[in-house]
Every structure is written in structure tokens, then in C-alpha cells.
Length: 174
Image (cartoon, rainbow, N blue to C red; front, side, top):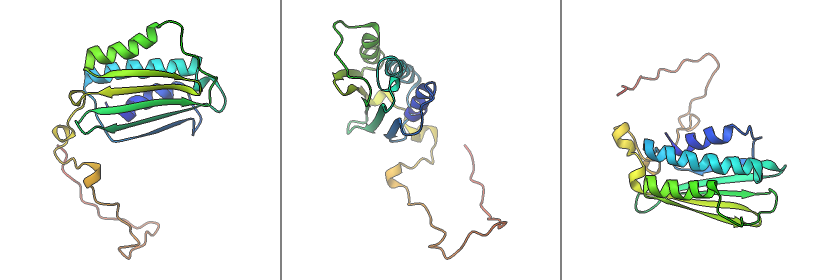
């Protein structure tokens, strides 16, 4: 399961309007165990955003960004804004413990939740062992930073005409 796919599944349940959720990150696939742990954490974050946070107010927004770390692990940040003012909880609840402990115990990673007045911020770290090497799934995988830029048909001197058929060879599937 990819990080983006997991996020879309969790957030889709809230039927948010365009622009309420912004996601950005690299195409990363998680191991099944890590996907389960991260999905629990994201579900808890989305549920709380729906009850008390950014999803509960008009103008609320959630930004989720993730990137690969130098050691091959993953950093993910969930940042809420535009919702009701946030106050730190007086005691640790089940959800906070679930987010922080499940990731630590099941993946060797961790999470830190910050209760800022402008919105909740949750920083998640997953170790390299939580990620699937894409080259083992698809031997033809080329990392995004090594891919050629998209072709421009104008640069090739061709135009796309209605009804024109392009002869595109089929690539072998493995």
C-alpha cells in the first residue's frame, strides 16, 4: 500500500471539499505491518480532526507531507489549521497512546503530537524497514528524480488531431 493511497482512503470517509486536504510526497510503498500501524494512526488523526479539529469547522485545512530521509526511512507530518483553537489535553487519551505506541512497537518508528493553538501537528517517523523496495516489485522502476521529463508533442513538431491514432508499442508486464 502506498502512503498516498492510505491517506486517500482514510480522508475519503470525511468527503472533504477540494482544497481542504493537501498532500505532497514521494511515491512510497509500505510493508503490510507498517501500513496497518500507519493506517491506525491516520484514522485516529482524521477522526479527531472530524470531531474536534480542522474537519469540524468551515475553513479548516489539513496538510500532509512526507519525504524520504537520508537513512532511507520516512518522515510524515500531519498539520491541521483553520479549525477551532486547540488546547493540550489534561490527560493522555487512548488515541494519543495508540498513535505514539503502535508506531513505536510495530514498526520501530515513532510519532510526536504537538497541540498548538492553531492546530494539531503530528510528526511520524518510520524506519527504512517499514518501506518496500520498489525495485523488488517492479524491476523496471526508475526513481522519480532519475526519470526523463515528460515529452512535449509540440517539441517533436507534431500536433494531436482528433481521430488520429498513435502507434504505441505494448511494454511487457512482469
